[in-house]
Amino acid sequence: MNSTDNNSISLLYVMYNEILFLKAGQEKFKLEMKAQIEELKLEMKTSIKDLNLEITALQSQLENRNISNQHTSPSVSPISSANTICKPVSIFREITLKHIFKMISEDLGIEVTSNKKATLNMCTKLICDDMAAHPSVIALGPNPSWGSIPVALKKEMCARHANIMKDSGIDFTRCLGNWASTARVAHLWRDRHKRLQSHK
Image (cartoon, rainbow, N blue to C red; front, side):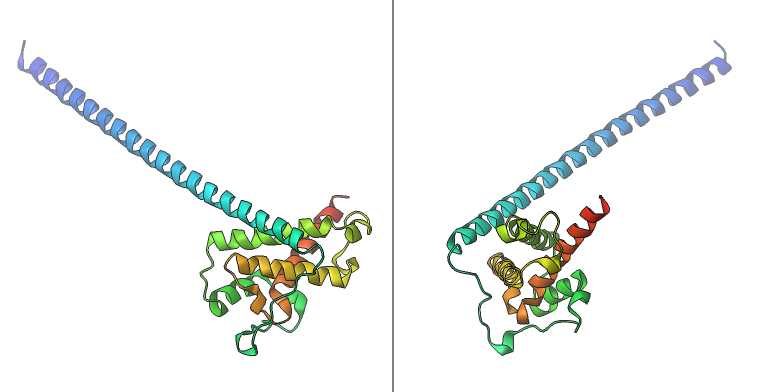
């Protein structure tokens, strides 16, 4: 065997070792990625479980309020003028979700996290579902507009929304004239109405 053969064999050994090293590195990377994916899945499952528990608690609160308020209409608790929160804009229909989040953050001093947003969305959805099932709304026919719903019923439902939000740790009852709850419930109802109209 000459020196050329020896060099070739040595080179092959070097290449083989490098291939083994790269393969080992790939396996280690795969294991690390798999571990990270499993950890992320676990975190997501935990977050979803927590959110489902919160949704269940909110639904129970709404059901309990329905039972306790069968003979008594709910109302927003009276508050002192020093603690009231005024409307951010003069025109009611121009109140946006951005205004609501700003009020929660600046006036109530609560961080607007994904869980707080989910709480607001779920409370609003529950109230709209409850209102849609009310006999006076059903009597209006399929997909009634916000303006066609009796004012007294809208006030009752929006007051219930404010109280549920308060029970969830976000005190909407401080809003003068209950503007925050009314704005969110009205917005979701109108949004549903438009979507159903567009599907006709």
